[in-house]
Image (tube, rainbow, N blue to C red):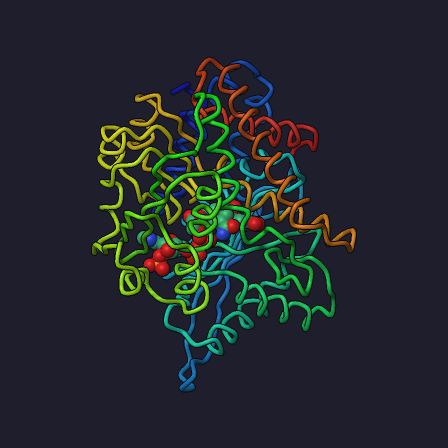
Length: 445
Ligand code: NDP
Ligand code: 2IT
C-alpha cells in the first residue's frame, strides 16, 4: 500500500478499536482509491482521506420502552451522520441485536460511496439500535419506535438527514416513526423514506433494492453476452431485498431455487413460490422453515451457510454482512457460478471477493448492486418535494436507468485506473471522486 494511504489506515485502526466491520469497509475503499490518490496530488494535499474516514457527527442515545407486561427496557439508539458533501445525510436504520457503533459506522461509510454512485444529491449516513423486533408485538414495536424517534427527531429533517429502512426496519416501523416525528415536530414532510403510499411513500420503493440488484446483474450478464433467461439462481435471506430479487429474476426468466434466514435455508427444485414466501414473511412474520410444510417440492436444511453449496449459475447474497466466505466463494466458482451481485451490504468477506476477482466471474459489490434502494429513496424525496406521486412504471424505469448508469460508471472507472472488469475498484473510485471533489470545493470543513 502507498505510504500515505497506509498511514491513514493505521490512524483509522488506532481510533476504531472493536470495530472490525468498519475497518474492513475502510480497508477495501482505501485500497481501491490508491491509484486515484497517486495520480491526483490534490486529494492528499487537502487531507481528503483523513477527513472522509471520520464521521461528521455521531449521535448515541438511550431508548427506554415498556413491554406489554409493563416491564421497562433500555436499548441503545444511534445515528452516524458520516458525510454531507453532496447532499443531506441519507441511509437506513437497522434494528438488530448485533448492532453496535462499529456496525453503523461501516454501513454509513459504505453509504457515502453508494449514494454518490446513484448520481443523486445524497450524503451518507446510517443509524439503528440493538433492539430486536423479532417476537415483539406490534404495540411493543410501536412503543420502541416512538421512543427512538423522540430523540432522533432532534437531529433529522427533510433537508438535513433522511433515514429509511434496513434489517428489522420495514413499512411498519417507518410508519410508527413517521407518526411520532410528525407529532413532535408538527411538520409533515419527507423526513423518512420507505413510507406507506397513503402518506408520501413512493411506488416501487418496496421492490427497489431487489429489483435494482437484478437490473445491475443483468448488465454484467449482457456484457458477457448472456442473460437471466433459463439460469438457476440462489438467493440468501428472505427479507425485503431477497423477496423482490426473487420476483425480478423470475420475471426475467430465471429459476430461483433457494432462500434462507439466520436459522437455515430452503431448496425448492421447482422454483420458489413467491406468493407463499410473501405470505409467510411479509404478513405472518414466520421463519423460512415453514415454507416446506406447505410446499412438497422443497426441503429445509438447518444452518444458513450451506446455501452456497447449491449448484447455481447466479448467486445473489441478500441477507447480511460476511455471510459468504472464501470457501463458499470457491465452491460457487467450482460449481460453475458465472455471476454474483450483492443485495446485502458487504456480504462477501475480503477472501471471497478475492476468489471472485481472480476467477474473473461477473462480480458486483453491494455499494453498486444494492444502490437501487437508496436511489428510489432519492426519487421518493423528489416526489415529496414536488408534492406529487409518480406511477410505478415511471419510478421503475428511472430506477432501471440508474442501475444501468451505475454499472457503466463503475466499469469505466475500473478501466481508467488499470483494472478492467474489477467493479470493486470501479465502484469505489467512481463513488469516491465525486464526493472528494465536492469536499475540495467546500474548503476545510
Ligand atoms: P430484512 O430485515 O427484511 O431481512 C433480513 C434477512 O436477512 C432476513 O431473512 C434475516 O433472517 C437475514 N439475516 C439478518 N441478519 C442475519 C444474520 N446475522 N445471519 C443470517 N441471516 C441474517 O432486511 P433487508 O432485506 O432490508 O436487508 C438485507 C440486506 O440488504 C442487509 O445487508 C441490508 O443492509 C441490505 N440492504 C437493504 C436495503 C433496503 O432497502 N432494505 C437497501 C440496500 C441494502 P432472520 O429473520 O433470521 O434474521
Ligand atoms: O443500505 C441501504 O442502502 C439501505 N438500507 C437503504 C437506505 C435508504 O435511505 O433508502
